[in-house]
Image (cartoon, rainbow, N blue to C red; front, side, top):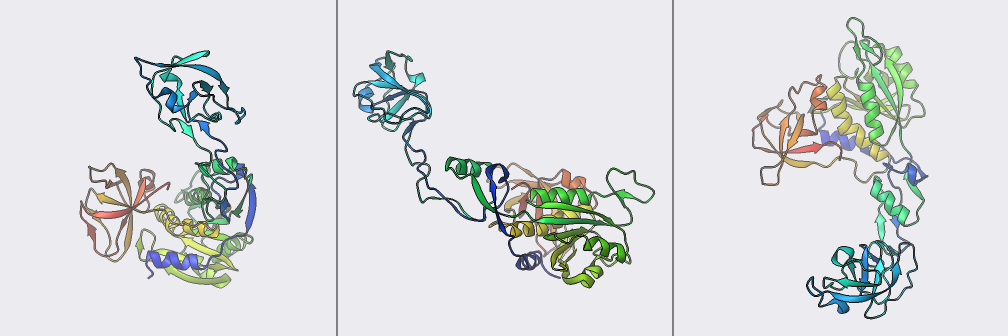
Length: 403
């Protein structure tokens, strides 16, 4: 069997980034940038005030205190959106608003709270040092600065930077279209009332949602029954998609047909990984479309999606960082595991006890059929393959969700 890392590497090596398209800023959140954004502007474009207050020459207020304020005539006002060509005569102050240009000659801004807020003349009660409450031209961005690098998954702050630079369109990788197929005679759609021996399909909605979170477009293929013919018919319906993701039917049971059908329609690269939950994982291609067959148990399906399918989707989008970051944590309870299998428990992080390393507890039963173990979790606890237990107090890696 392959290790988790080996399986991840095999999957990613078979993928190529999707084509580039241009989108507006309103459509760019969560997309993966295809080309580096380089500043063509000076930001801020002029020296401006970080506070509502008065622009002054620091030397003119050097001796100001609350008991002995310095009185200066007010020579004018600088407002946001006003001219950046104003000048401040020596021995005067100028009323200035947050974001407004600081007049030439001024080298500090005294905030309103440190004055009497006078309009004809102002009493300054503090000695402001040069640079106080000022934002200088170019201190944020300058022409030639690399602001966002290719492969970055765009956040709201990134779009603010692009807007400030006047960049209205961004080159991004196309979103992958992902066929989502559930399999099993026992399954009904979530809105139906299960009959005897039936259960609602929880994997289909969960995988579709996870695909959206990873930047993809889910294409629900419905539920295939446990016959080779029905699995084949559903898989053939995935033409035009960039990836096929199925759940269940990939193990060795008499009614598990997914692997055989995939081999008949394309090829199978591997189908088992040395891990729990999720050892049966079928990876291959169906008529040229990459295929990942996940286990059917709900927790196994979602954990293997997290470890294998989510990175694949980000790789298709050209992301520079395709795996969630891992952090050290200290286990607070003894944790059992099967020897020889890298194990992923569901855990909850708790604040550290002063050493900078958070603790982690389990969310209850770690059965692969207990969905609530994921509902309560905020991380996966990674236990190494070697050994059959991890003692309380040991350091392990965790994979926090949402990073």
